[in-house]
Length: 139
Image 1 (cartoon, rainbow, N blue to C red):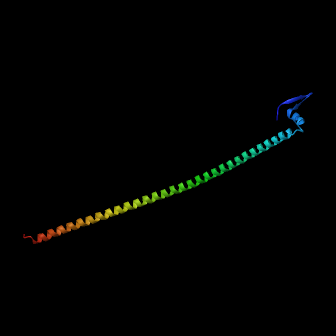
Image 2: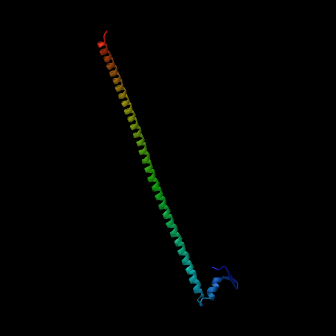
Image 3: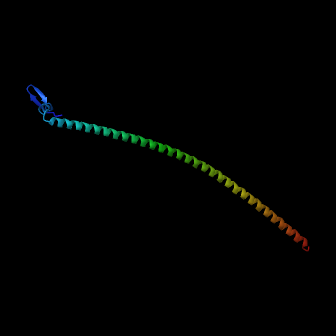
C-alpha cells in the first residue's frame, strides 16, 4: 500500500491505518477495499490464465515433439526399406545382366558353329562339284 507515514504523537502510523480510522463510516473505505479485492481477484485470474496458457503451450510442444519424432522414425524406416529394395533390385539387375550376357555369348557361339558348318558344307559341295566336273572332262 502507501508508503506514507503520519506522526501521531510519539508513534508513526501508516497512512492507510489513518484512512481506515478516518473513513470508517463514510463508505470510502468500502470502495477502496472493494477495489483492492477486485484487483487481487483480477491478479489471481491473470496468474491462473497465464499458468493455463503455459500448460497448454507446454502440452502442445510436447505433443508436436512426439509427432515429429514419430514422423522421423517412420520416415527412417521407409527410407531404410527403400534402400534395401534398391539394393535387391541392383542385385537382381546385375544377375539378369549376367544372364543376358551369357545368352548373348551362347547365341554367338551357336552362330559361329552354324557358320563353321555352313563353310564346311560349302567346301564339301565345291569339292564335290569339282570332282564331278573332273569326271566328265575329257582327259
